Length: 520
Image (tube, rainbow, N blue to C red):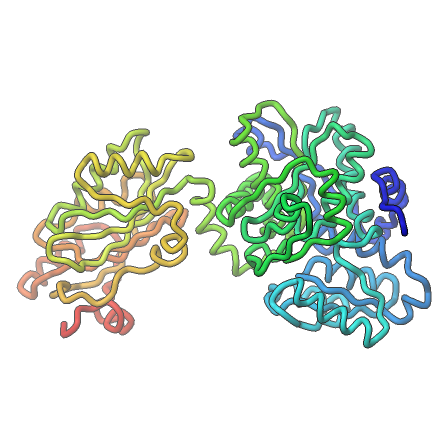
């Protein structure tokens, strides 16, 4: 029986790995803004700078460069959620061999197109990496191809370990120290390579693994002292969506990884934003896991003056996902709190509610969102978002609403509210008679929303209100106001004196279908 490889065996393999025929030595870049905020030095290992925008190229090429001429003549096959696929495809192109890539059907189109552009033959199968792997194993036997595993292979692990070699050399060049390296985990190839090198060379540096809360197979496996197969995995961080970690990667992680941090979707979205602020680059969710973990680690352990390295392991982000990321980043950083507030259905309630918001402890707060649809004769339910300056403020704000007589439900951590309710403005309402629907644009600045409400004529009831702060120079509000026919001329004159650009949407067919009072 073959003896397991030791960290010093891996050290030799890493030092002799053949990665630089295709890979580059990526930058180790200080994250200055994030470091100031956390009172610790954060260094970003920019693996998003690789030719395929991911570290996976290292391991794939190191494995394939060591195949025999006969194996290269037959071709290779792999299963991948995307980044390993691009690494294999590019390596195959460099080595002049055929590459069949089996990818889950959930893989972002960006990654599928990238693999095809690099010459890979794409086969879509299953909904996760594990499903794709099973199909790839079947094709490998049928066609006599060499399987290039994305993580559970010593040569692949050694290729990924060159990242740690570079980090330690770069830290030394910067004349600094390093306290911990944070590493995203899918199947475990990256952390196996990093931990082997670091524990062989500088065992005092901590290696901390990071996983999504819905794809934490490694953390669960280490806790159970055996590999655990997850029944399902979340797909937001598709690069780490692995149901079962590798045998070798589990063995290494169990022996060498110091700790694990589990992060959620909102924390990762906030980390993507943090990385953008410091680098002006956008990484994919898996690429931001390490930064999300550093923030969580600092908050938990109250550290100061330490130095942490975060491996930004990939940047293959679908552009269409940025809308979701931007929406959730503020909540993830807890810079926004969400509430359902009940106020009396009477004239002046909106204004009184805004006065309470303006007088909240901690200074003036921007209203980031306001959704309302008239539905009851005596009570109104509004969905409101408020800017915050730190964690834990939402509970204090909710208590303050109660103190002023407004029943409030804290929705800051409610997935239904964050994902769906905030985009809904009600529906048909029998109470919304004589309603005129207006779309306004106004300069986005502190107090602008309150100013707008203060200019509303008290005799015209607001029956619908939707506002979302988009971070732009101009805000946009959709307002329904109940204006009796006899007041039409007066209302039109009011619109002219208001001073805000507007479009009337009362005759809009979408409004008539989904929001206008039945029979109106």
